[in-house]
Amino acid sequence: MEKNWFIFSKNDKLDTHVTYYNLFRYPILTDIESQAALIISDNKLRQILRRIAEHESFQTQHVKGEHKDSILETINELINHSLVTTRYIVSCKKKSTPIGVVQSKEELGKFVLSCPHCGRNFADELIQESFILTDLGRQMTSGSHWMTILLTSSLIESGIPKESIIWNLTQDSEEVDCVVQFRDKTWIFELKDRDFEPGDAHPLTYRAVKFKATKTIIFTTGKVTKEARKVFQDMSHHTVAGKASVSPLYIEGVAALKAVLQTLINNETLLYVSDKAKQLSLSAGLDFSPIFLNLFGKYRVEHKGEFIEDVNIFRYY
Image (cartoon, rainbow, N blue to C red; front, side):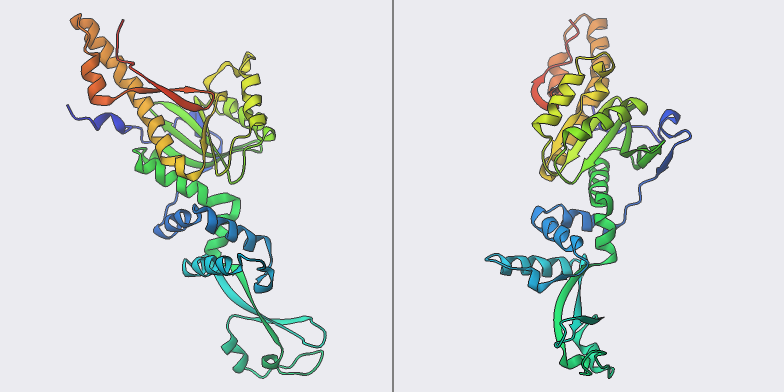
C-alpha cells in the first residue's frame, strides 16, 4: 500500500459557501517573493527591516550604541537581498536643512547645483547616508504580506493544492488573511507579526462563525498571550463557542510553522483513513489497527491550542 496517497487532497476549488458573493484573491507566488518571505522570516533581519520601515528615511546617525556594527551589517544584508536601498541626503551646512536626495554620491558630480540657502555646491554640503525600503521591501512588509507568502508556500509543500487556498476573504468589512479547504473542511488562518492579544480574539471568533470555519489557526511571530488564551477558554463555555472553529490552533513563531501544519494535515488525513480502517476491521472481525498504525502513525490530540499527545484512532471497538 502506498503511504503517500492519503496526504494529498483531491479538492480543486473551495466550496461556494466560502467564496460566494465574497471578495478574495487567488494566491500569486513568485520565486522572488517566496525568497524574500523566507529572508524576512529571520527575526534579526525582520526587526531591522521594521525599524527602517518606521522612518521615512533611516539614517546612519539613527544607529547608536554597542550594537551599531551588527545593525549596519544586517542592513547591508537586507540591501544585498534587494529589500533595502541606499540614498544620500544633502543638507545645508549653515542651516542644517535637507536640500536634496540622490541615489549615489557620483550623481553630485554630474550636475552643478547650488544650495538655495548658502550658495555652496551640493557636493560641498553635508552628505548623510540613509536607508529606505525598496518596492519589494514595502510590498512584503505591507500588511505582513511576507507571512501570507510563507504560509502559502508551507501549505503547498505540505500537500495542500494551490487551488484550495485563497487570500484576503472579505465580506462586510470582515477579512480573513488566508482560507484553506482540505478534506471538505474549511480552515481560516489569522496572521499576526506580533503577539496575539485578547482584543484580537473576539473578532477572530466572529469571522470563524461567519465563514463557517471548521478549524481556526493563529499564526503569530510572537505568542498567543495568556489573556487571549483565557478569552478562548471562557468562550468555550458558551453555546456559540462550543464549535471547533472557536478553539484555535496556535502556531507561535516561524520555526514552528511547518511542523504544526504537517501535523494538522496528517491529523485530517488520519481521520479519513481511520474510517476506512475501522470498516475493514469490523467487516473482517479482526483488529487491523496495528497494521494501519505502523503504516500511518498516531493521531495528535489537540488541547487548548496545542498538540499534547498521540493516540491510536484505528481501533474499531
